[in-house]
Image: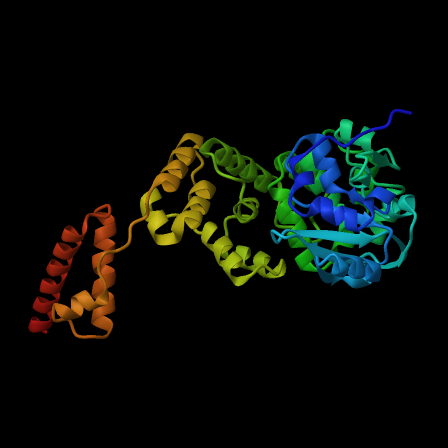
Length: 407
């Protein structure tokens, strides 16, 4: 059989990683690269994270790293994971080979093993169960992951229904990985996810939101979301999303690409929801988003009242892009406005309340009211220079004096 070799890649020579592999006995077959780093290197795409699998127990990993003076953080000791911190601060997860002894759909109890195939068998998809020897570069594939990778197919290891019963999040992971890597969906996996969609209700909303936000920015997010809606996958947890949400996502995603914007998960989440700020707040709360994230969703779902520059001034660049792209349906106008927002150097209002006090306005509500009035006029005049801003202030203060003297 042909011996498959992991291609050379820049991440493999990053400072401290070869030394870490040496410390963990890669030359003796004790430690291998696993998962995304192997998969993405074979696909020729950038590697975000590097994970290592090892036969060493977690305690032995900590001891070996301590002897080599490599910082070790016990980030998931119960599940066998130690994070080794390289000299440049990059974290590398080192996980002892495992097998599941009990699962409940949300959590797994594991036992450690020294069997590579046993460790691979507990992973979710074949394309995520690829290993590579750091020393020899040999690739190890126990369940046909290489063939699935070549076919752009996301396939469960073993019985899909059983794998979903072990961890219900695998339903969303199936679609997220399909949106990133897949071509035609694996029929058995798709049917299993459809049958077990109600299992999503047992998951924490934090896990659901984290996975769903990743899915929304994947290259094939639009078609994948359409498939999920057709199969009723989201009905148990996000029934607000329907075919109209898919259409809005398609429009926003296309505008992002044409405007040269990176796909934004919160903007895309807002896009798939109906235009209702109250509903957006409710969904954000249900998904346990942060207060800042929920405010951004609510703002994105609010009807615009301004053109691109005033929007950017009032809401900031991201907020302006959200509201503009979600509400402007004409593709050319959406792209034009987005480009304006990105290119524009957002000015600062050149006056403060102190400038009005110096003009004789009494401290208190009059200052705040007048300052807001002056700022609104400054915005309406398309952000003139400081000299014009001061002239506007002089006029406003003169009118204030006139009105107060009459009163």
